[in-house]
Image 1 (cartoon, rainbow, N blue to C red):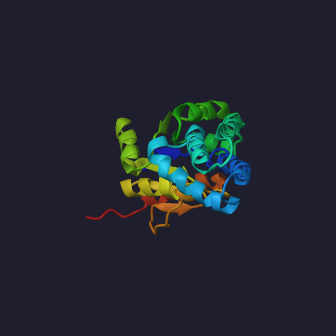
Image 2 (image 1 turned 120 degrees about the horizontal axis):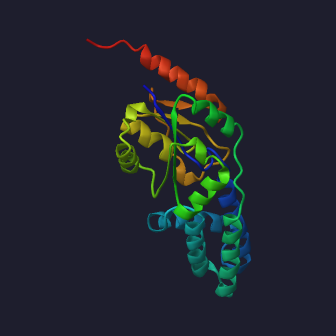
Image 3 (image 1 turned 90 degrees about the vertical axis):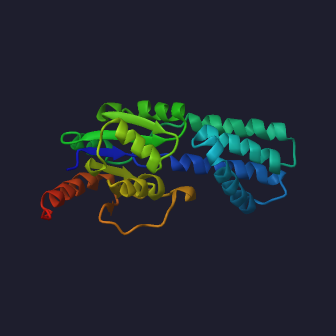
Length: 240
């Protein structure tokens, strides 16, 4: 029986991805006139550079800024100190972006909280994520909130075991197939994939054919789908 509905945060409950892509775009446009590469080449080089740094820097705006500063040092042909100062300002602007909830989020959480315990599981910089969680105004909806360094099978398993939750009792809702869907399905839970309008290429993964993975176009469709999952579980014949 489903007892817990877990939600990803960024680009599932509120806007996030556009801020990162806009910062990267502005950075590349700023760097291009002062580099031996054009904007297209810099964009490709920057993506690889950021991904290479994920194991060391993790996720979030501060991690992005460390990568941008390092990239600037490597590829700028002008006064690097001035470029770094401008780069830091881009990060400061991103850190001050408002938390904008996606459509139907509040209504959906209110509906689900009447019958299930809701969990919020996100990843990234602890301070940055906690700021967004508080400013979202959604904290009262969740029984437990956790910011993980990484969202993989081991991290999820530790979290759920700590709370004494069986994976068969869990449905995870998120926009990242790599981080929100595949690990939960592999552990024995159900997962609902809600694609966002844009997703960081690093978070993409091949889709898997599984009876425990579902895809919907909007978070508003989640309550009906979960009721359907519950119904199916109740009516599965037991093997003798």
